[in-house]
Image (cartoon, rainbow, N blue to C red; front, side):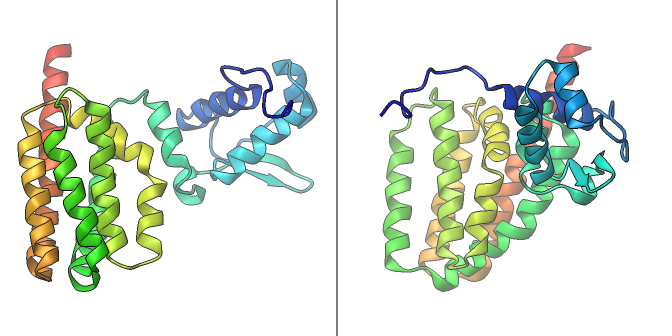
Length: 246
């Protein structure tokens, strides 16, 4: 019980360490191939313990931001070559939740490739339990308050995740989960425009109908149209934001 009730801290020293070095690497202030100071030196400079530094570096290694090489030390990676899906959250945090055009386009391209195929497989492989879950989600969408943007974004993610589950593929649901924060970061901005709700929920109903009827082509077309609609609306919102800032 005592272990469970440790004092609550807003942010751990390790998290602060990781966040600082993520910013330094993603901003280019630490260049690719640059060698970091030793763990001992980093601890002295930052005023933290060596275990904090070590745990933080291990976290950065897991994301592909750095490599810890024997007899060499810790070296900054090219995260585009070495990075893992775990870095997606770091990219969102680095941009402070803003809509970065390259990140948005990259995510849309990936979703077009993956989710159109999951829709096709869902139409082929869905079971009665998936249809029951789909219709429960559609009913929940009808009851949503348009002002509850966070809840809408989470429900929308749940819908797409259910399509991946209905595809009966082990990897697709895990892949979708891996960029959940990036996904909801964009969709919260998207759903801040109440006019999009009717369009999105309409696409959802069409997709469920195609999956229920095992219509692969219609399922693929509807998913493609749904993703394109989201992309186009976000681009329009970004353009409007730029106009306001100039």
